[in-house]
Amino acid sequence: MNHRNSIILRANQDSSQAISFKRFENEGKVMIYNIDKNRNCNLTCECQVSENNVDIIDCVFFPCAYGNIIAFGMADHSIIFKKENFNGESLQYETIEMENDDTDSSNSSQLPQFGSNLRISLHPPELNLGFISTDGIIHIFFIDYGNKIKLIPIRRYRNNEIFLWFNFNDNSSIWCATQNKIHKYALNSFDSKIEKILPTKLQLKNDESELKFIDASISPVKFENDERVAVLMSDGNVHIFLGNPGSQHPVSKIESEIENPLSVEWSPLGTRIAICSEVSSPKCYIESTYNVWNEIETSTK
Image (cartoon, rainbow, N blue to C red):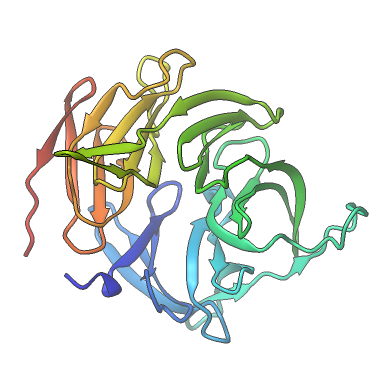
């Protein structure tokens, strides 16, 4: 498997549409699919997001209530919004113009430079967008959407260590990660509501190797009204944390030991976890009983 040819796949809120693009050197090109009732992906169009062939780093769908709108985070640190439009002959995605926020007189009203983790909250009542800037700060905006899009800053989260990952959890909080900890913040507060400690050392015979944070994923389904967060570390193992303020340490561990780990993702029903690698096929695990995970054999054909 050539990891330079691996792709990123994103689905919308109701899994009726999906988008894919090359993880590396994509030159701003994406493929957009409709997903039928049999879960088949049917290509509907190819879209050139960037006129200057700038690579796409991340993308995210708006909630379905807003129509087929996609936000793209670009390698030149900009954000581009595209909306589906049928011109009578073909399906196209047109750029939505952005309007500066004139309510903020404290600075130039320019957006911070996009770095990674472009996210949109799918939980009403507000439509919020967030990302991690190039200096490791989490920025949260309210999306004012009419004929144009205006991003109004509402929150900014800093830490002594830079943030490496974040995602919206519900309509009132976010989860985020630094190198050594994961945190939960309420959107109406700058104080860390919950904090969990990540493993930092990997014991290899008589030698210790430093573990690094790679990726994380929030389960879309709560278990007994408790959240769960899966954290992928550089040794390829996944540590699962509960969202309550009790134990600071993981309650479960998936020892995949996958080489060159790249990402982790919960399934929509919260019963499976997929772990992707830069150099090998993904590994998938199913929860047989609470917090007990067994690998699912997958075909490599």
